[in-house]
Length: 107
Image (cartoon, rainbow, N blue to C red):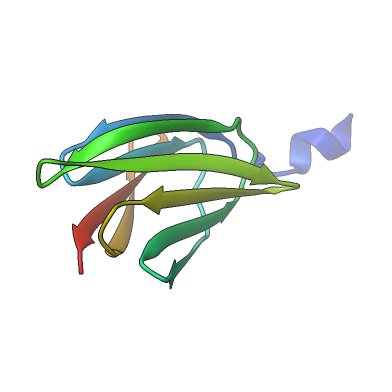
């Protein structure tokens, strides 16, 4: 019981919101992020708990597909479009939660 009180909160993805030019991922504590670009597909990895989800957003008038898959204790965000993508991320603390903003653009 005492051990649970002293452990930090486990990182958990609370929600995903589609925004203009990208996505916002909301976490309970600060996320540690790693990104990759492989053959025009944007990948973002976060050691976090959360549920798998998927959706679509519009980028410069074109449909872009995104999905979050769980691989053990890692969530993998994959964003795929007809043209190669580049992505950047920024995290900031707001009202006790962490917002991870992913900005996307075509190469």
